[in-house]
Amino acid sequence: MRLPELAELLQWLEDAGVDSFEMKQPGSMIRVVMQRHTQPIGLRSRPEGQRPGSGAQTVHQVVAQVRGTFLAAHPLRTAALTEVGATVTASDVLGLVRSGGVLYHPIVSGKNGRVNRRLVSDGDLVEPGMPLFELHRGKQ
Image (tube, rainbow, N blue to C red):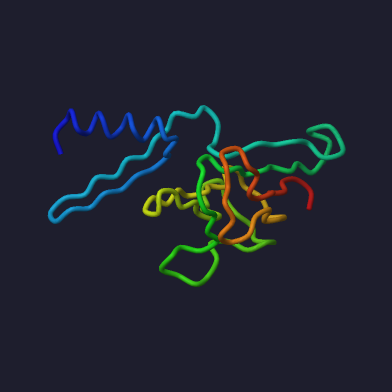
């Protein structure tokens, strides 16, 4: 792939809101991970009950960044990437969004916590900004 083609590909990915992309050809592979966000990708939070620092539990909503089909498991596996009640770290992948039939966008937790709820079902169509998971942090 030549530099002008790569620049055009990167612009298409940015315009489409794609966070990661991987392409393999015989003898070569390219992987692009976009990092244009100042806070963790797919994270919104809202305090629940008490004010922060007072032992309150905080709920974080992990949201879709792209339009597509939600997948609870990788297409080559049967087990879900995460389950309700699981303890996760900020870098854990909770699910995937398939867009365009071939691109799989990871849904990263963005925070340490416990998966309280999955707000969508496997195969649901999702839109950017749509809440997919709720994570609980703080006193359990």
